[in-house]
Length: 216
Ligand code: PRP
Image (cartoon, rainbow, N blue to C red; front, side, top):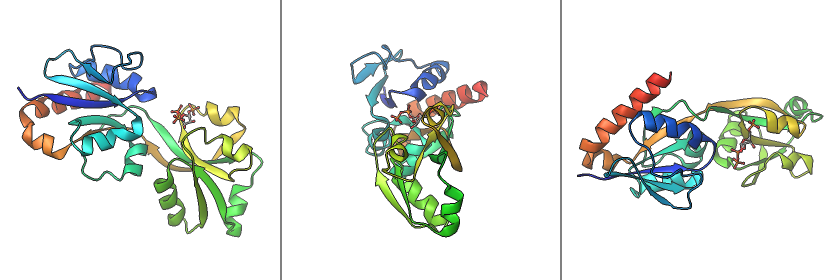
């Protein structure tokens, strides 16, 4: 029997990923959010889950430590997608990557004047590409979370971050001034696993694709 390992990350997308995987016939034996285990068995003897940080999911799959995984497009853009097959948009974890600034900051004016802006973000690669595409020179400041704080304390003029409900921006008196791109979670697959474990992999990929279609 060919065994399969699926990499998942704790957090928001997990709550949508689990029902989707359940519809495809795979469920973790323990809830990854509450379990302290990093390797969790499943409803199938040939399939297990590894629980990693969201930014690490592509790395585990790229090196074949996991055969497949669920990863946000935001994370994949930063990773670069090298050594990964991305067969499926899972349509979950939907949000938008935006530029956001303080309500009282004249972002459009600053862009028009060609001001050199300081941008705080954990999405450095995506932000660099976005501003280069607009012909803007920016100083990027790498943060690891709570980006919304940066413009409030003078660390940055604006941030590049994800917006879902908009509640975090609102609570911190920030507004989205530019949309960069829509984001959703993708299924990622190790290309060598796909070849070598095709017998187990193919039916699973088809079952997940069917679950996504049923989900609409
Ligand atoms: C994301 C993002 C924002 C927030 C937006 O962070 O970085 O802070 O969600 O969501 P909202 O528009 O619904 O308020 P998340 O909570 O995923 O944690 P993170 O900071 O670890 O990325």
